[in-house]
Length: 85
Image 1: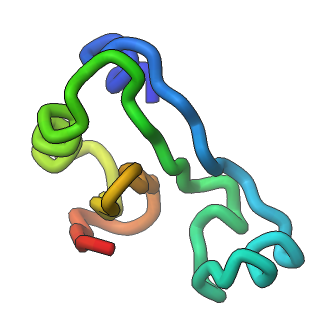
Image 2: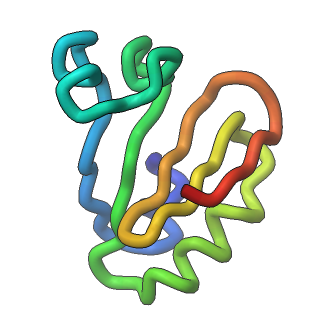
């Protein structure tokens, strides 16, 4: 997250660690990496969202990157998984 903040400015964290109860309530994946504290959902506050998405998509030192309409999911589990939500 620090690398992203250094590059794109302030970030808003929408979700980091989730309890199993909260994850169920919001209909998160049963295998969500948020349950392990290994994922974060971010929004950039100063950089155009499209530029932020493009930059995050090129990162190779993370496991999963999910691009959603209003935020980007980044996790440190596994290798090079990419998806659109």
